[in-house]
Image (cartoon, rainbow, N blue to C red; front, top):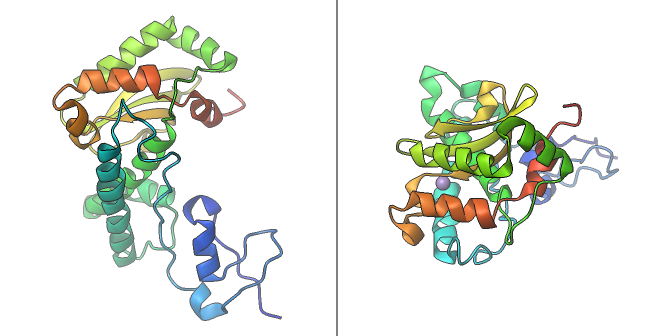
Length: 241
Ligand code: MN3
């Protein structure tokens, strides 16, 4: 009987890649399919499948924007991460581990930028859902405690997104025991600042320019009013807060 070879955590490897590598999902009872040589090949970060169809966010975000944003921009970050992580000898780490390991490292700026952008986009796709949703009771209480009201949260988020100079991201995060709105430049993200991200909106021009040209505020308002996935936000909230 062949030896079992454990997969790394499933959040960075799709089921398909686990089949290709022939590794064993812990507890699944499956055995190595192809033996050690293939199982030990360098694992790859895979691009998360879109959680909705490319036209599902219309009329707020067009199919064309999603095709370019997911199919070209996000894909390039994932591809570059794999190339650079392999070259840096970090190919066995998860995407999140690469982001945390390379932050602030002067000789790994390109790897940080690409891996953090790959991670941020995964988070962005999950932050949206066709059709408006609402925060659950627990989140509603926290929003009211932290911002005074949902309207105030919307205003603060909109303000952060619009005033982010140049490219970046607006976030709803948990910081200690309070919700906060933050903005980050370029690839920077709350993970490396000890905060727990709950939702994000991409405010790089490629996220909205085909649909809104320079009207970033209209794009952000459309996402806030119609697309935010509050169920995802609730799932990101630690239970012990
Ligand atoms: Mn983007």
